[in-house]
Structure formats: structure tokens, C-alpha cells
Amino acid sequence: MSIIADARGDNWVDRHAPEFLKPWFKLARFDRPVGTWLLLWPCWWSIILARPALDLETLRLFVLFGLGALIMRGAGCTVNDIADRNFDGKVERTRLRPIPSGQVTVKQALLWAAFLALLGLVILLQLGPTAIWLGVFSLFLVVVYPFTKRVTWWPQAWLGLTFNWGAVMGYAAAAGTVELPALLLYAGGFFWTLGYDTIYAHQDKEDDALIGVKSSARKLGRRTRPALWIFYGLTIVLWALAAREAGFSHWFLLGFAGVAGHLVWQIVRVDIDNSRDCLAKFKSNIGMGFIMLAALLMGGLA
Image (cartoon, rainbow, N blue to C red):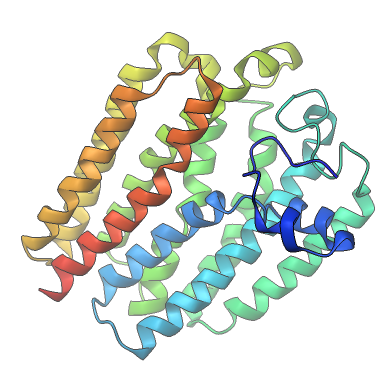
């Protein structure tokens, strides 16, 4: 079984998972954890934004959202691969995915998605009522996303709405309600995702053009770098406002300077014509997430 193009060569699924489980784990992207981290970060940030306390309840919420991000990202990716099965086989980066390569049938994938969704529901029911209803609504965002690339040049915008939903869910789980800091964090996350997923989409722009798939990378083309200044600039402003509205101390800004610096580095250094560099810049957002979490902890606990 070949390693999928955008997975690390030493990923744990290919190295350690039982052979019969590998197609299922790959369908859920367990071999490529970057998406799980990007889904998880807004959840963890919003929990700290709502209740900056490193106690057992914070740990409980961190664990629940960590498991939820892993499981629901797997379900979402499975739905995405079912919807994109006729496209993925024509794109070099995705042709070895389990469905287009024939390792998993569509019916089997649907059952796998349902199983993961059921696990996600069990986790969701451990939260408060507001967070539960927000989680139920997130299913609409997840199901619609795979089809946006057929009708709009901005599927990355819908991904931003979807991948940052944890900013409001995490806050609701920690505070029992949704307040302005959560909405500002969500809005900033929207533009963050719009930026990093535009970079990611530049990997496939030639194949996408051949098969008629739309993306912000194709739409922006050579205007990508100026657009990134806007997207990431708004991200920085909105996240800073979120921390201010939450009453965080000036120590937040010390750590947040690292977040801003990292985003500027992405803009300046990305090579949109180099697929490997685009993937590397995309993956670097995992590290940025750690810096943001540290900044929030500094500002909330100081």
C-alpha cells in the first residue's frame, strides 16, 4: 500500500497500524494529523479565553475537544472523499486515497462516516446544552463544504466557517454561553483559514484547472500574496480584540507578537509555485497554534 502524497513518509498509520485498518485510518486522515490540529486549536483557544484556569475542568474540556476534533475531522474527511471520489483519482496528490484507489467502496465509506459521527455524538453529549446544539449545527457546515468547490471560487471561505466553529463551541462549553470574545476569535479564525487554505490549494491549481474544480488559489493567482496580507492582517486584529474583550493582560501581547511574526513570515516566504513549500507553510500553522495557546495562557493567568 503506497503512502499518500501529502502524508509524512514516517507517519504512524503506514508504520504501525494493522494492514486491514490502514485504508480506514487513511480515509479519516489519521495519517495526516495537521488538519486535526487546525480544527482543534480554535477549540482550545476559546476554552482558555472563556476560563483561563489550568484545572481539572479545563483538562476535561481539552481532552473531550481533542477527541472530538480527531473523530469529527475523520468523519468530515470521509464525507469529503465520498463527494470528491470522481475528482481525486485525476489529481496526483489525491489519487492514492482509499476510495479512488479502490481500497474502500462508497457504501463502506458511508458506514465508516456514520460510525465516526456516532462516536462524535457520544463525545458531544458530555458538554453543556448550548455547546451540544452548536455541535449539531456544525454538521450542516461539514456536509455542505465538499460541494462548495463546484459552485464558488471561495470554498476556502466555507472551510473557514467550518474549521473554526470550535471557537464558539469551546467557549460555550467553558462558559455556558457565547459572548463577543468568542465571536471575534471565530472571525479571526475565518480569515486565518482563508489564508492557510489558499496556500494549501496552490498545490493543486494545475490539476484543478484541468478538471474544473474552483479554489481561491485559482481565483487569486498572482494576487495571492497581497490577499494574504489582508487575510492575515484581519486575523491579527480580530484575535487581539478577542483577548482585549476577554480582559486579558498585556502579557498576551508578548506572546501574540510571535503569532503575528509567524503569519508575516508565511506571507513573505511562501512560494506559491512550489508545491512542497506550500505544504510546508500550511503545516507550519500547527506551530503557530502552540504560540497562540501560550500567548493566551500568558495573558489569562498573569
